[in-house]
Length: 165
Image (cartoon, rainbow, N blue to C red; front, side, top):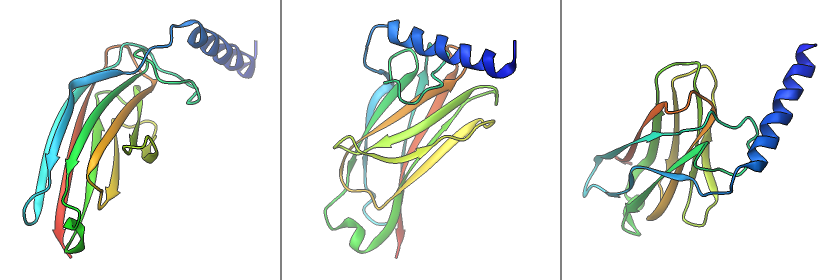
C-alpha cells in the first residue's frame, strides 16, 4: 500500500470518526476565565491558565471544535476607551507544552466571534500571538489539538502590555 493511499485512508477514517462523535462545545481551561485591568500608567498585567485536551486532535481544521480536540479560555480586558491614545501596547497570548511531537494551534477571537489572531507552527513546544492595542471586552482563546497525545498539559499566559508612545 502506498504512503499516499495510507494517508488518505487515515484522513477518511479520522473525518468519519469525527462525524460520529457527539457535537459538544469546547471544554474550558482551568480557570475557565480571567480578567485583566489595564495598568494605570505603563507596565504589564498577566494571567495564566492550564488546559488538558483529552483527544488526539483533528487534522481537519474545518471540523468544529469539541471537548475532544479543543479547549477555551475567556479573558476580559478592562481598558478605558481613550487608553491607547497616549500609549502603545498589545495583548500577548502564549501557550506551551512538552514534546515537539505534540502539536497544538492557537486562535484568538474577539467578542463578536471574529478570529483576530492565529498561530499554527509545527515541530515546536509553543505558539504565540499578539493583538495590537486591544479594545475592552471579552476575548476567547482557543487551543486546538492538531495532533497530540491525549491529556497533554498546555500552559497559557495572557499579558496586557502597555508602553509609552
